[in-house]
Image 1 (cartoon, rainbow, N blue to C red):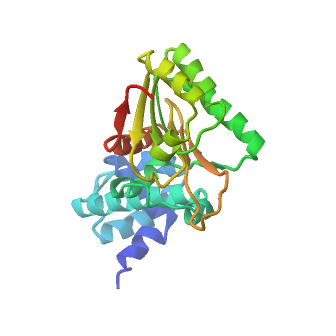
Image 2 (cartoon, rainbow, N blue to C red; image 1 turned 45 degrees about the vertical axis):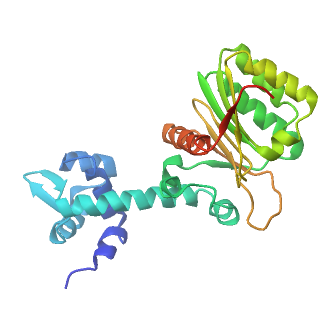
Image 3 (cartoon, one colour; image 1 turned 30 degrees about the vertical axis):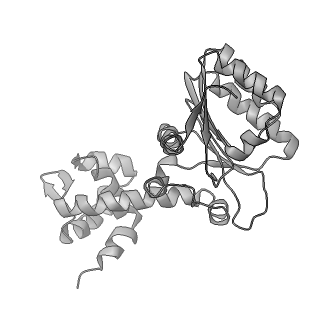
Length: 261
């Protein structure tokens, strides 16, 4: 009697890793052995199980996924990437709201990879923003969404513009309503540089902030229980950056550009 397919996929690390390696195309046995750091005697029985379940086919010493194998592995790979991303800090993701993410990006949350969760003290938050700002100065463009106003935002934005960085900044209506006259003047001067693009989102954003630079994604979401915490997620993969830009563009679609405050 054959094993249930779910057991074939997940009850052996060697079988699972073999399938994921073959997702990119056919591979010779020696390449599989090197990638898995194992021996032929240890791997061959696992490959035989994959062949018996019509997931892998063999041509000489070369192995590849069957059409059924490719169908299953593509879905399995997507599931595992989502699990890995959430498992990096399951308590953070489990205690914070995710409903601000559009369904197509929530489904692809695995693209952010294994991110670091940072919970700085309030004084240390200034340092975290400084570090993100430092990396942002190496970017051609940065994207930012905010529902709160940190005291040194103006200073950081001004410095980025002086370093020829293009800024796209979305803020909430509530934040715009609470901006002082001094802030208005400064924002108008930034807008006049043609490097600072200012947008207003008319609805409740449902999260605290998003920042995307060339090399980093920083996201601050809200707790489910309504309590405030200073935790944020910092990701540094290219796929995380691309995912973050998509999230920014999702909110940009409902925003209007501000030419003058």
